[in-house]
Image 1 (cartoon, rainbow, N blue to C red):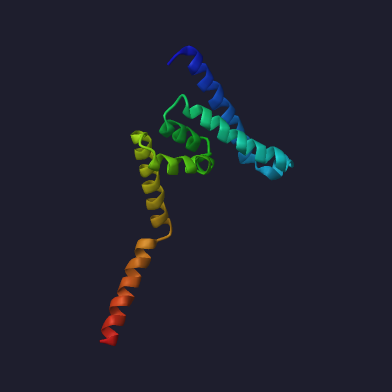
Image 2 (image 1 turned 90 degrees about the vertical axis):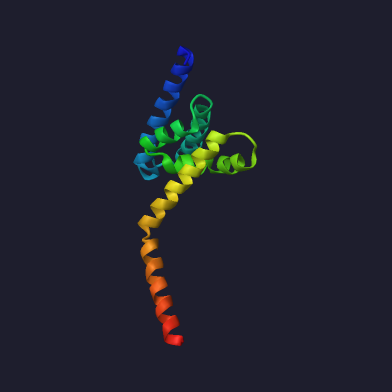
Amino acid sequence: MCPSIASDVSLMTLAISSAAAIVKLGSAKLSCAPFFSTLMDEIGRLMDMLVDFLAIDQVYNFASSVGLRNQFLGYFGPRAVRCQYSGEGGEERTFWVDIVQKLLRGAIVREHIRTKLTAYDSIEVWFIHLVT
């Protein structure tokens, strides 16, 4: 990576990290709602610029490490949909499929869906035996 590009990436990551620290404080601590909403927009724009220099999975890992995973997903979610319909971006498409699988797996575990489905299946089998 060229030194000037590395410097640009470092500055963007510093700005995003600083903004993440402010976001962690919350809007109540800032007592300026317009600033907070503007900050969220700027974080999205900075992450968008960072994607020009780094792979999207690297930007995702960085955003997650500074506590901006939800902001990343909210900002780049529409991009994931566009990626599905464009003919290019095989690596990015793989990244989005992996992210969706990871999030879905986490939701299934967190919400105990497998246990609920197993319980539902048992009730259904019991009801079928009762009716027949």
